[in-house]
Amino acid sequence: MYTIQTQDLSKTYKNGVNALNNLNIQVKEGEVFSLLGPNGAGKSSLIKILTTQCLATKGKAFILDIDTQKNPDDVRPLISCVSQSISIDSHMSLKENFIFQARLYQLDNKTINQRMKLLIESFELSDYVKYPVSTYSGGIKRRLDIAMNMISFPKVLFLDEPTTGMDVQSRRAMWDMIQKIKETFRTTIFLTTHYLEEADILSDSICIIKDGKELIQASPYELKRLTGNSMIKIGLTDAKLLPSCCRYIESLKLCSSSYIRGESAFFVSDDSDSSFPLIIRALLDKPFYVKSADITSPSLEDVFIDLISKKEVKEDKKVC
Image 1 (cartoon, helix red, strand yellow):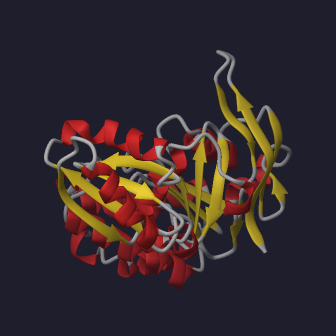
Image 2 (tube, helix red, strand yellow):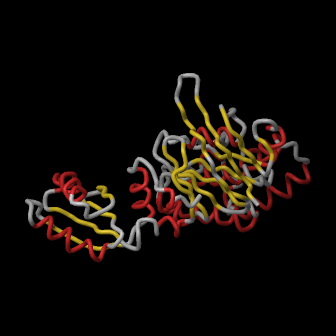
Image 3 (cartoon, one colour):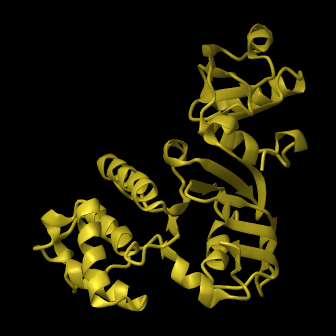
């Protein structure tokens, strides 16, 4: 069963900006689904439509088979959304924040107390109850923000870049919290993030979008197989020559695509083992002084960069 579906969803704003372009996605019940894309890809516009904050220009969106456009009042009790900015009130206590959120969903006192106790224990907030919220660290405030948004026991939880600005330790604690929400509460989680490692670790399914249109939707494992089992990584003594190095190798048709990350060039080939000596030999014929060369396994970041750098994805690679 799909918890979230869109059908040819489009959004054009009054200023003419086309944020979504016939977008089609499917999110299975109980999974962690990550939406990835460069800035301006349409991620925020999609969340606003799915959470009934705005209407689409064309197409349909469904939450548990309920049309978000026609029946927003039926959708809202089923969802909760944690935005990029922390929404807790630092002037209220931890429990008062929970109660305020619960009142928005018209929960009775007995239900509020039962759920608040469960959430405080589940998300390890017991040690902070007696302290003012204003004294909490950013990581604890974000943990409280997500926990209180679970007070309604939503069927779908939207997390819009929840770990932005966190240190490594806080980010990993947040990953544990997201896994706990999925496993303990059976909640479908719709996640946006700019951290590719985060999406790789947490996601059951990932959709990459560009210019408001889906490029591909698949599991992290399937995505990493798109560029083949391996790719060629080249480092030059003079990193400034990397762009011309990529253009030269592409002109010789020795790779299907290439891109630069850090101080290395990456070459995607259907057969890296065969292409590797040919690329090295070609570089030796030109003034490209190779500092390092290796055949490496692609990461999700490699796949992401490769996909968004292309004008389109071949139909046989579209898994969604």
